[in-house]
Length: 326
Image (cartoon, rainbow, N blue to C red):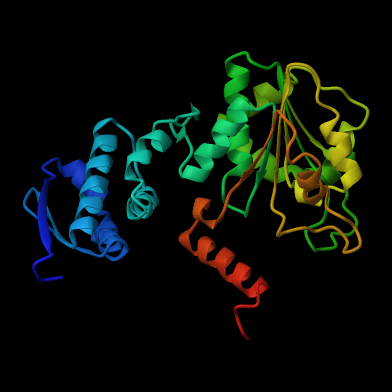
């Protein structure tokens, strides 16, 4: 990095709490930013020194200024947030950080703000707000259903809708579960458990029991939707890749006046029999240019789980394209 084209800049990080978040545990964020932006970083006293190519130094400086501004504004940032911010800075998009992190959908009973964490998630959230029907398509861990549920709770609290309906097809994920004991509700509960878990996280156990007890939230298998018309509702269909074309059409035509629908799914994880077409794959062709309908695609860049999940998704994609030889 030495030479005539090398540049050096200093940034004040005298706020110890802010510096601790930006640097990360044992300087893990600093090392990741060095590698990601191809710069050298030195933190001594209250000053952070950036050394490297002028363009790379400018991107790193912009990144640290954007992060500092967010922290000064009271926005909590995790190590994953900082490293995603680094990837934006690498593409010259560090200025988009404020758009993402300042968009708080709601705050959970435990004080946790729910908000988009990537540009893809921000586009998805904005699409749901703007359109009556939104399809969120992407791999596991991209927040498709969780963000939609948070928006549904927010819409209910703001009296934009009267109830929330959550549904998913009861399809076994490549496993034969066999006989399940209990009544009908107990038989379908295992399929709906991920929706319950998300609701517990978003509104807490007490909030969940209150909403469910008053009939303000309904969680049901897709088969229960047949023959109904849902007015003034926020309707979410999860795991839509496991619907048949007939089921998808049935669900979409349940939508009544004053309602909003969000359909989420991952077309790489279809659990239907091989001879059965996926309703999610078909509907992309049927409604691709229909006014009022939005298709939003999330990628591995929008995964907000363990960093290894991104690598796993990419590895499977490359394997599927024949790039990996056994």
